[in-house]
Image (cartoon, rainbow, N blue to C red; front, top):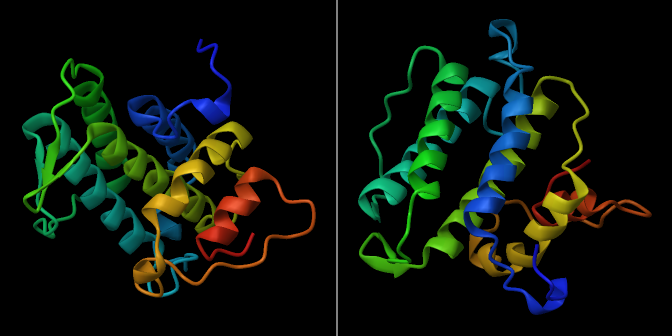
Length: 193
């Protein structure tokens, strides 16, 4: 455990942050049933099946980044038949790839170098918020764990800018009174809790 105060440590949690995000999202995936695949999600234009396909594409890109050190922003749109099982398998694969990295070699994203810690932290943000989206679509209240949300709040302003709104994220909202870190994170990303 680090002896540095949290404010002195790098905000980029890297693989450890990604691992916690995946653990949270896997809990949400356990709620999915075939009858819920057409349920609406907090991502207004998507139903649950579309969200799961998007998550699979995202995890495929993160897996590619960890295994071959490059990412194509356009991946083939071929969703597996059992999306939940495919997501579980892909999550394990990408954690295995990233956990065995011994070098800090940058990853090329459309030809531009990105450090592994920044890339895996960005992946952690996406995995976490979509894990919350999945639970919401399933009608479950699954708050983002406080420590995970607080760590993601430290990097979110660096990863989500005005150019990402309204495309990737809605406009930020005012958090509810006495918000948890998860409430603050979701409000920053334009989601109602």
